[in-house]
Figure (cartoon, rainbow, N blue to C red):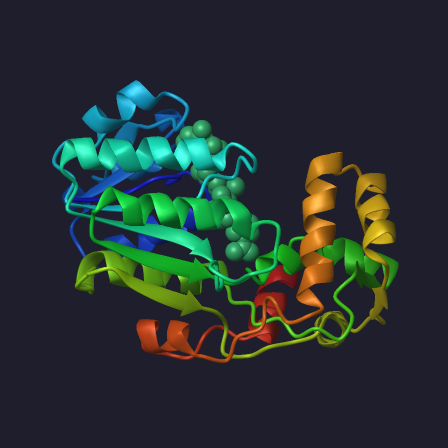
Length: 283
Ligand SMILES: NC(=O)c1ccc[n+]([C@@H]2O[C@H](COP(=O)([O-])OP(=O)(O)OC[C@H]3O[C@@H](n4cnc5c(N)ncnc54)[C@H](OP(=O)(O)O)[C@@H]3O)[C@@H](O)[C@H]2O)c1
């Protein structure tokens, strides 16, 4: 059986869909905090089990019979090292034969603050002795398009990335890669650096919004501090605004650029273009 944590999340749901296209539902285990949120998956024959990273004692029993596990990194930044360690420990206890983990692009050397918890998790996976696959995902295109409507309304994309190029890819492309690795790869402790085929600056992204909407949209570059304040001003909690502003500023130096094309090689097709995700978002 193939199990996926965070299966009620945005990436997790896409991984389950990709798995459903490859293997029968009875071999898929969706691990979720709240099973009621994935009643649709149970109805389709997917096995659903409760799995809360903060309930360490309940995790190993929930992994009974699982051969391969995909640990989708938790969204609770700051708590992730302990949460992931609990999952890795449980996987070992339950006899899981291999573990895949959604890490961050070049986790070993990335200057992004977000990379710290991923590095610690990768180290814990290596220390566990279990065979692994590290899926070092780059940025999601959706990190930008989630606020496309507001950017078009105000005629501005804001950030601190300057001329930095970002090799973002659509969530669904990372999901497909994860499903393929889980079901097909040897999983003998590989590292995959995954990113989009195309790279773009935030000015390019603003131009893509303008083209798709027919309205003027330009990129406004700000200092990290001003961007953080702007994010807080639109209601983001302080710690989240700080992480996003730090990531945006650090990306100016190329931390989210990659031209290795490992993602398209893994999924057997070009990654979804930025313009396609923008058009779909505005539809
Ligand atoms: N590469 C990127 O650009 C990028 C951007 C954002 C995030 N990420 C990382 O990638 C992960 C997946 O992205 P996403 O878009 O799918 O995020 P998401 O929609 O926020 O999903 C996060 C998942 O983590 C689960 N989770 C959080 N705390 C948990 C806990 N204590 N026990 C069990 N599950 C828990 C959530 O469960 P519920 O469904 O119950 O809330 C949810 O299913 C994120 O969690 C984050 O680590 C990457």
